Image: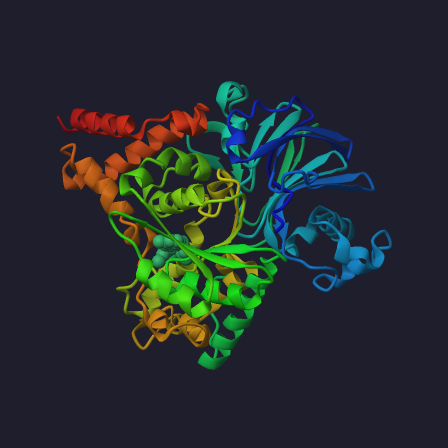
Length: 515
Ligand code: AMP
Ligand code: MG
């Protein structure tokens, strides 16, 4: 099994390496010291594959530093690159960093619109620094611009801490968004390449992807066939020769991924289902695992233990949306509890956004599409797919439904294909109907926060301290904000945060407000 050689980094360019307080939480750190384009970058990279070299490549004075993996296999995907004399027919054996460099050398900045993958990259070229995310911003990327220098990191907390506030006011960076609680750190938006010239302070941005706004009418059979092809390709490009794990709830999304994985994987396919004392989906997951013949595990943990993982979830996602954290919490615990070493993990995460799966009660197809357009316009910054979520336990996670081609197709589909004959996510169910038990294909959606009892347990823990119903949401948010301040803004290790104490503090603060 291979994991990406580099899953994250923090570098200072034309300045000292940043402080990088708790970056090590997401894996093994190695030193980075690279030169290119007349610039010098130093700091640390996080190794996905222990022992692998950092994912850098240099040529013609240009240097790239890549985190994550590209979804190109050889020159077939971008034939033009095969014509570059330096690489010739060797594109099939290029590393991802070399492939990206070749693309950059051939197309310049525009080449970033071609690249598909789960990645972010820093490029040093002719005195300029380019920091770019993939279409979904699935590996978050942060910047801090200082006088004559620049810091770039895959975790905001690496740029905060003691040195934060040194240079407030440098916030007008196109293509970036603020980070709560870290005044001079900026997040590169999804599908964006930001260029900064440290010597002059010039800053520009270019979009490399944005969610399609238009929709396409397709005959149902054609839509089903196209989705089947796109999802199959997305799963295949995420597999290697070794073993692979699918986190399986037994819902249609993760079951579709498990079925395609089992069909196309070269190594052992393991499926894992998490349950708690407050709920599980074990029967539904087992039905799928037995049908497919995967090596299946059930893991049961205490429901309050899931809530006590909040500091890890907040440290990984570096945002303050309590509702989204309820989806991430069970996954954080699942990844931490998996036995054995680092794994390559596929998930069904994210299918509901382009398919409108959360909106079970929307009957009007028009309003379903409005909800999808809204959700696609607001995903950026939630960091739901940050590799740190699995990376804190050494794993590499990847999400076939947010593959650029799958996402492009799903978003564009006419909403009547997403809700049809009263069935939600109809097109997906039809696309995998032959691969799964009928009961699975018909199974209604259950969110991970519901199935695992995460939402109800957190609520019950607050109410047990006397908090009234109507203030539960505000107290959850207060807890998340307090943890975010400590672990992401002040650099406190997540292991040191006592969640029960944070909960009592949130309730005490609520009493003060209430009186
Ligand atoms: P959901 O909120 O149900 O869409 O969950 C998102 C993804 O998380 C699913 O597609 C699965 O890959 C994974 N997942 C959800 N629930 C579980 C569970 N109980 N055990 C293992 N994986 C799960
Ligand atoms: Mg589910």
